[in-house]
Amino acid sequence: MCVCCAAVALSGVASTAVRAAVLWAFCYETSDVVSAEACHAVTFLDLEGTDVIAMLQQRYFAEDSDSVLR
Image (cartoon, rainbow, N blue to C red; front, side, top):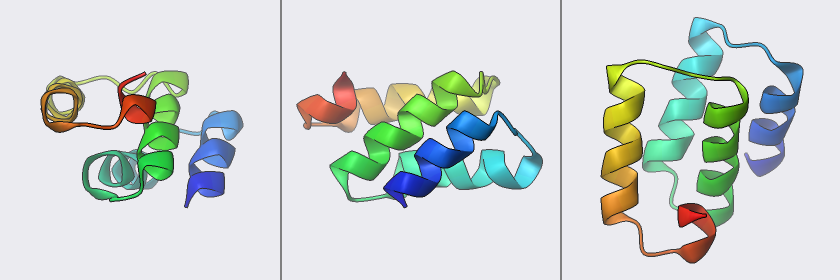
């Protein structure tokens, strides 16, 4: 999934399906590496909305991995 998140971010495509997959990976993936790459994809794809803000805040306050917090 890590390579997939990076590839999606580089593609620049932010369809509804891509947005849902990236946000799911960011919110629910247990791997720190995948969560960090999904976060990069959120930023690179410039995903916006109250749901994105809520997920970022939730993950920030619940996260204990330095690699994801960066």
